[in-house]
Amino acid sequence: MKPQQSDRLFSIQQIQMLERNAKADRHQPSLMELAGKAIFSQALTLIKPGQGPVLLIAGPGNNGGDAMEAAAHLSAAGYTTDMIRIGEDAARSPEAQLALNQALHAPIQHLPADVSLVPSTDQPAYQLIVDGLFGIGLNKPITDAAAQLVAQINNYTAQTGCPVLAIDVPSGLHAETGAIVGGAAGCCIAATHTLSLIGNKPGLHTGYGKQLAGQVLLDDLQLAAVAHSGYVACLTDPAQIECHALSRKAYTHKGSFGDVAIIGAAPGMAGAGILAARAALFAGAGRIFLVQPDTELRLDMLHPEIMCRDARQFEFNKQVIVIGPGLGQEQLAADLLRAALQHPCPVVIDADALNLLATKPELAALLQTRTAAALLTPHPLEAARLLALSTEQVQQNRAMSAKELAQRFGCHIILKGAGSILCGPQDRHYRINPSGNPGLASGGTGDVLAGLCGALLAQGMEVGDAAAFACWAHGAAADELVAAGSGPIGLHASELLPVIRSLLNRLVTGRI
Figure 1 (tube, one colour):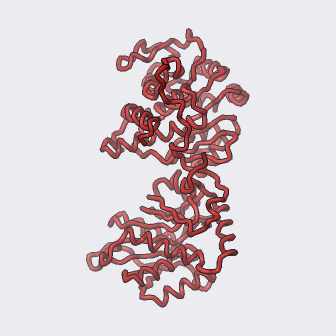
Figure 2: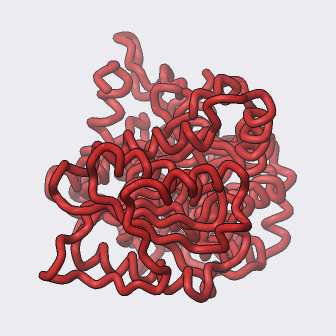
C-alpha cells in the first residue's frame, strides 16, 4: 500500500523542483501569497484577540517574504504586530519585495535586528513568535546577528512559554537530515509548531528535528502535483503494514507462531536476555528459548514459559534468532554469532553482536554473504563502529548512515534514536518511525525491541514490515505510558511489555 500524502517525505531537491514548476505554471495568486495565508490561518489557532502582540521574524530569503505576507494579514485582522527583518531589503526576490512593500504600508511596528527581547512587566508579552528567518535552502551555520536573534528567541520562549510557529522548518535545522546546520558551530530555533509547506520533510521527524520542530503541520499550497511527485521516505503508519500473520485461528497451536531463540544473557548481563525473551513472549511467539553462553539462569521465575538453555548444547533448528542482548565479547560469543549467521532462518542482530561484527571482519563477511533475512538494530554509537565513523557523523545524516549499513551488509536496518530510521538494501524509500518519546532512553528498551522484532519474524511477517511494526509498537507503548502518567521520567523497559501486547491485539482486531 502507498503511504498517505501526509506521511510521504520529500527531499529538499524535490521540494525545490515542485516550487520551480509551480512558479512557472502559476500567475495568481503566487506561492508566497498562499503561504502567507496558510501561516496566518495557522497562527489564528495559536493566538487570541487582545491577548498580546505577535512577533514575526523575516529573514533575507523567501521564508522572510512568507513571514511578511502573514504579518500583513495579522495586522489587517486587528492583531498588534511587530516585525524584525534580517538582511538587505534591496537584495530580496521580486515576490519578497512585494510582500515587504505590503508590510511597510501596514500598521506593523518594525523593530531593529539588535532589539533586546527580554520579558518585561512594562509591556505585554508576545503571544506568538513566527519564525521566518531561514528555510530549507540554508547550507551554512547561522552566525552573527542572526545567531544572536535565535538565542534571544529561544531564551524568551523558555522564560515565557510563548509558542513559536516555524515556517517550513525551524531556522537552523536541516530539512532533510534533522541535524543542526553546521553541527556544533550552528544554532537552531526551538519551535513548538512547524508549518511544512508544499510537502512534509524528513528532517522534521528525526534527529534534532524530533524535538525542535514541535508539532508538525502541513499545507500543500494547493499544488496538485505534490500528490503525484516522487518522495524519498515515509512515516511508518501501522495501518499500512500487512499484519495478518499475527491473527489467531481456532485451529492453530503454539507451533503455528514460531520459535525464537534469544542468544545472550551472559553472567552479569542476564537482564538484557531476559527482557528480549519476555518481549518475544508478550508479542506472541509460540516458544521462546533463552540461550546463554554460560548458564546463569535455569528458570525465569516470573515467566517460566521461557525455556533456558546452555549455548554449548543448544541445537539450532528452525528458530528465529535474536543474538546480542547481554552476549558479551568473549570467544564463545563470537562462535555463537558465527553459528547464527550460518543459520538458514531469520536473525536479529543487536547490542554485543553488533560490536563483534565491527571488530571481526570474518563475521561481517559471513553476514554479507548470507541469503536468509537479517535485521540489524544499532543505536548511533554501534552504527558508528560498524561504519568506522564518529557518532556525530552518523547523527549528521542518519538516513544516509542507515542506507550505507543496509547496502554494506545486505540486510535491513533499524537505526535507533529519535525518529528511528528503517531501510533495506533494495528499498526505494526509507521509513521514519513517528512514535516514541524520551522515556525510551533507559536501559533495556533496546532489548525489548530486539525481542519484539524476533517474535514478529517468527510469526511470519516480512522483515521490513516486522521492523517497522516493531518500532512503531515499541514507541507507541511508551507514548501510552507517558499519556497515562508513567513517564517519561522513570519509565522502564519491563513496563512496555503488557502495553505492547495490548497494542498488537488492538491492531490485529482493528481497534486502532
